[in-house]
Length: 172
Image: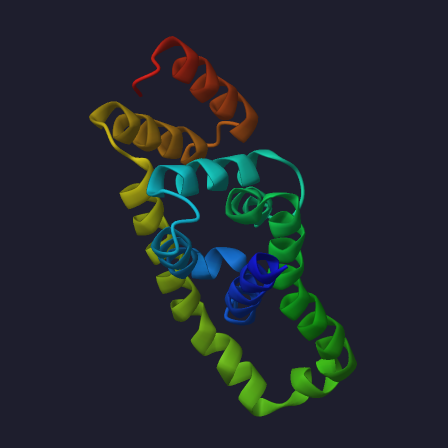
């Protein structure tokens, strides 16, 4: 029970600072989870990939991280800790949405958050590169995938092609 409480409190803190979504604090999550020894950098990257592969919220990787940290109890603690702050905040914001839409400070804040969001997204990219790319082949595959998706190719064919390449070339 003590382990589940520690997992819950860790993910609750991560959930509290997830402004802009769970992806925004991915670098902090990677730092905390690897420092506690719950996952290795490679497992963190793999968990992120698995979380992106399944339909649903993009932070379903916490299922994997919670399972690695404390089994089934850790999974439930991580899920509750990660999503409770955001769900509670969203429920509260519904009631003040119209007031915030009219407030001058609210519009200024939303405009200011765009560059901050871009910075957070860039830090996520750097973290994933640092934790998940360990060969020149995987770096080239990332570049090719990004180029194809940017040029309008469907994400599913790119994903399937990456899976086939991963099966054929396990070192990539």
